[in-house]
Image (cartoon, rainbow, N blue to C red):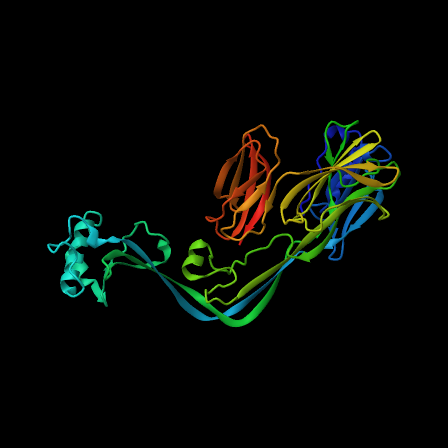
Length: 474
């Protein structure tokens, strides 16, 4: 959960702050002060709230507390908030040593017997019945066709590194420094070959050394920074103010009594929410390592057995509510139980009418990822916030998706601008993009070229980002 620092126009504070109050605030040790504009105070004057940390809260290990004072430092009220401790449990096997992982990739090029002109006087390669002649012909042919590409080649080196295995002839080649080879970091040997069918090609041998993870399981718990459930929304008094403020407390914005009101999240710590972390002791399990050696996040030695697992217990949000200082809920704004991340809310007040605009991301009954903007009208007589409109911007299905299965993106239609969908990895690498017809509302994105992981799908219109959603490819 992120907190925003309250910033206010100077004109709302100038008349309310006395020199004496300024001096007293400056003398408070370790006090980070925040200001509540006088427009939202019952007595029409500004107030401060302060504590011992940078967010304006006092944390003693059991509770978060915010204290509010007037500018003579007389206490007005104090509030306690729920503490939420996200954490990650990591389990991994100890290592009993190391093992060498090897993979050989065979690349077949062409049939030498089909080459015109022939590579020997017998109109083709000598048969496997005469392996000595066949070796000599293959060596000479390879040398003549590659001596200008690789000046280090010589007939002597090719002969000395040539051997046979049954009816297949191999020549071990020198790996050229700076040459382009796929997965060159792990390349240990290159061989050219010709088999009994006259098929010519190359063999690439890759290897790496990894810990052998076959010992006892070790469990560790990593605790994230605790957060509280206070929400600091943006509040705009349309009739009296040209700009909105991030308002942590108020006496006059939501009703006219003398009690303070504030907004808080309805939240709990739950498994599988709030994203996860990757343990720094894991090896690099990018596409090349997975493809070559079978090393993944959960199988660190590529032996097919799980040796690493991780569960993240994050903060899960199910709604927001406006609460009075005596802990009574005035208005409630529920959000779907399967929301991803936190929600945000903004309030607009004009005379006796208050509107709320809440935004959240979630999955519907078809497992489509939606980003929803929900508009409320708050009835002050009944204390009920009624939904007046929902807007869903972009969704994706299936999510998670299996590698190779197309992801169908549902986008709002009716646009007359130039639209496109782009896909990036979490580190910002561009993966894919395509334009969208103005009347299209469903776009199929192929995933064959995607490696397993999480991706950001972004809808743009006239070059401007409209909405994004996260897609998991397994």
